[in-house]
Length: 297
Image (cartoon, rainbow, N blue to C red; front, side, top):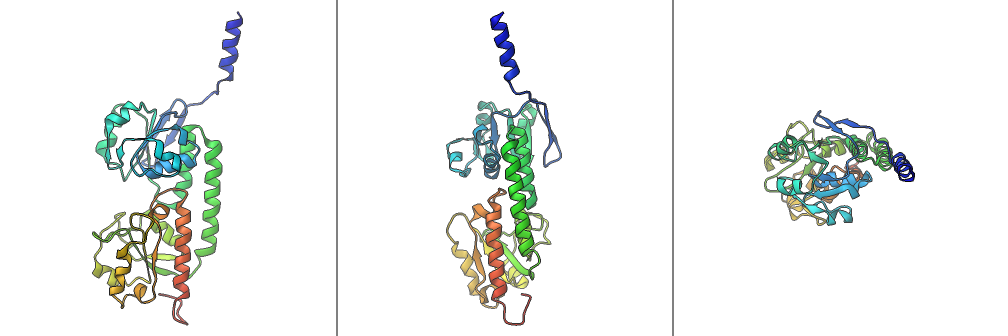
């Protein structure tokens, strides 16, 4: 009788979880019977958001370059986000996989679906979507007590930046991802959202691909007032200053060639607001460098 009573008391002490039903960024319904305890992340930004949402200790597998925060470096690797190792993923016995809709290949995602592993797809196209992902990941992992305040803090900081910069005179901006091929961002890419936040105008914002290839001639014809580049690491890429070869280019003539570390501007995470704030300051510098009497580029 005593053992039965102890069992009943222990059972009563267990948290009573309701089923979790969420619609992911692809529009698909994702169902969990309880919060995920073994999560596999298929992109660096997903891993970082999981940590920010208080679920870092639930991540049992992730991809290369998932290096923030420091604890992410100790998680087992399952390949790169473009080349996943399905066998390794299955060996980790995940109860949830979170993928990147536009970054992971459907050929990698479909087998996971066929095997019945719950798959949530993330696709943050706008700055506000980062806060939504924080809340979604918190709900999936049962860590809303951390994720909720983190999302609220993100939204508050975003509102402050928008209030401060969105009414400023527009600045024609070219964002350069890479030099060869010459890659930029289209209108639907989240960096375009950051440019708009700062009162900038993406000179290639009319292009529909997220990361279109453009020509040097197209950049010269667009004549941006500012060129912003990221590259691959913490160092300013040499190819950013190569634009000085065209002194007729407004950005080169006014020394408006700015560098922002890629981790702060190209990852869809809370740190994106650090990159956006730097971008806003750079565009403000460009406004200050305008010839007297000119309010536009």
